[in-house]
Every structure is written in structure tokens, then in C-alpha cells.
Length: 123
Image 1: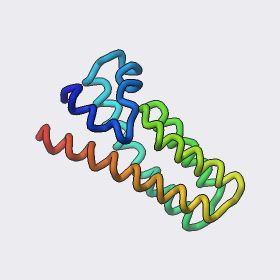
Image 2: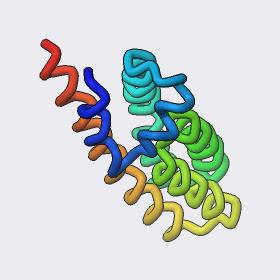
Image 3: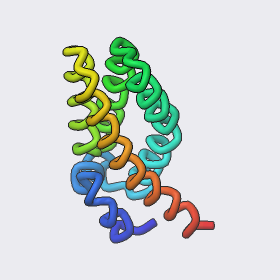
Image 4: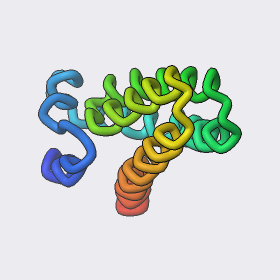
């Protein structure tokens, strides 16, 4: 992948920050995104399940883990949304937990579609 290709992620990632974190190494940045896509998919599913069950401890646990993973990958909006889910879960606010989880899912789906499209382009 070329740096220009990574620019298309700018809606869901701070590409400049990611490249800085990866010391300008595009292959490393792409690997970070691939790892993120592989490891967080099940957490997003688990978060939705926990929110549906109003399991606020589990919502907090998963959203806190996601917040850090997203921050490390420079996915600032997803990290912010995960933080909002954390806050809603601590307040035991069912409607905010569900609403923020849905927003996070939407953002995640957009990101994951980009990653899968890149994988398809390589193959």
C-alpha cells in the first residue's frame, strides 16, 4: 500500500499521527490497521451484546479496552466514542450506552470496510 492509499482512511483515522507513531513506515502502519481490524471485531460484537443486556461492568471493560486500542492506532473518533461509552456505562445510563455503542459500530463498520477493500485490492 502507498501513503496515498492510507490517506483515504482520514475520515476515521488521524493518518499523520499514525504515520508519526509508525516512524513513517507505511508497511508498519498498514500492519497496525490490520491487527486492529482482527482484534477489535469481536470486541465490538461483545460490546453490542453487553449493551443489549445492560451489563454495565462488561460494557465498561470492553469499551475501555477499545478506547486504548483505537487511540494507539490513531483512530481518534472511535477512541472518543469508546470513551463516551465508558462514561455512559459508569453512569449506568442505558440509553446513552446503547446510542454511543451504535455510533461506535457505525464508525467501526466504515473502518472495517476500508480495511477489507484494501485486502481485496492486494489479492
